[in-house]
Length: 174
Length: 130
Image (cartoon, rainbow over all chains, first blue to last red; front, side, top):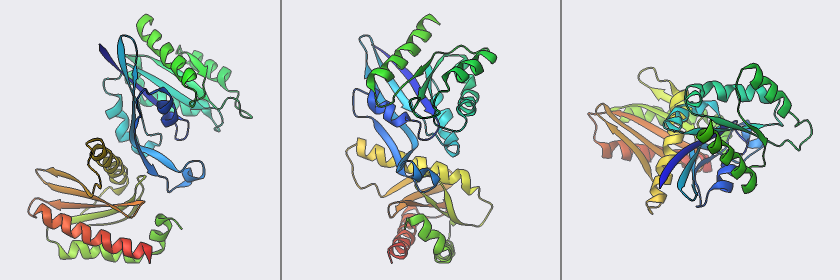
């Protein structure tokens, strides 16, 4: 049985750890620490190394790694990205500039994404002002990038499974 | 009040503790106090030390060390130690939200580094709780 490595990345608080909890068939490994900065206004803990979950498919096991969101943990990004077959980029629609957020992660993981593939999950689209999916499509089109974009709730296993399966389909059929 | 805010208030006490660590232990050349989520709070160093990146990295390393111990069904992770040809880095959690990292050269015994790190961590914990 083959083993696939996928990476979930995105800004702090977007829902990466929650997504891995939803997806994983075993209790995930999380390396969270208490927040002591402005992030504590929205969450009590933050990932400082990585999150890790396992998903068992019929013919493969998927290992999903979640990166820390904050840029000071950039040292972990390259370590985690090495050997990954695909990337799930989560974008928080509630934030001030979701396109700029997406750009940061597309840029940072560019060398890896270019040789693999990516899908984009947009969280909190139901909140006021959270309608940014069309803007994200337009942005990607301008950049000549063609990745699936889906509105997802990281707490919903079905949503996250759909996103992951669309990434696996991208990898298989390109 | 969070540990981090207390540390800002007690900055002088923290710096005295870190200075004492360097002054009393030959071979220990730097000490860094940071938050568990990777912010540098105080440092003492014989040479230049880039504490910003080091604080973030020690946060990742401590969290990983603690989780690996749990995965291996070992509890109460006291230290995370990196030993290399130039010396040692010794990390220890201080209370709930802080971590102290001691940097030592290869001429000092690891046990001495651990003991000295323990002493300053205990001292800082008393200050935070007082």
